[in-house]
Length: 315
Image (cartoon, rainbow, N blue to C red):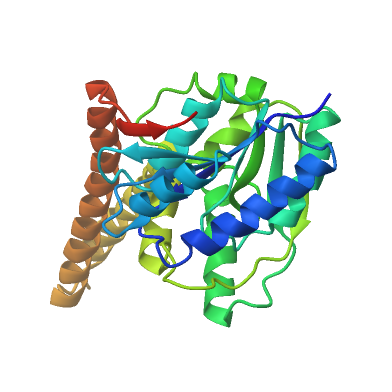
């Protein structure tokens, strides 16, 4: 039995690459259909995340010319993760499996065949994992690898060198839909489902045009979102640090008393100032981290919609 495959492709200001990417995806789908790997009613769905350029008009044009293309327009920009979530949730009842991929097609579309094959062999989730990073600069490679290692160390378990290029079955998507939190980090949440999974490796291509939507600033923000959304490790670290500082303060009190009674205590401004700054900085840091979690609780209890669909171009 052939697989009814949908693609979920979040887009934000992608007018420079969209037509080229659409042509490549259409050619790939046509080939897979001819080879009997996917059904003729499989679809390529672009999710416009409140783009400010001509992205949506291009999506509308593609849809009018070729029924394989569909489009979902969000009412405003909600960020890559929410746009992708919208695609997954909207399409979960329409397809046997959904592959998520970015619009720039830096991820290798030729791995679709292997992903579908692994799905048909019983895998509910198939992760696209980069085999190497030779095309990256040293700085990009170092920060990217550090990103995954830090996430795992801090309790947000993710697949190393995997971003958001993956296949999810209908069963996996239905299970994932049960996760109702507002603060989402998909590459850390999907492994929580626990169904049978596998990986396919590929080499990532250079971006053809436009700018990366994940520069270092956004990558750091994403890492922090992932850590605080999936783990309480930062609070535990502060607790441990507080215990260490408290133990050190007890030692210093004992040392001060012994020095005083032995008659060679010398008051020093430097030690006093260092203590004040150290303790003050630790307190501010602790309040900041705790405040981050309280802020997330505040957003969660509001139960606001994670996205609003303004328009859905389908058959």
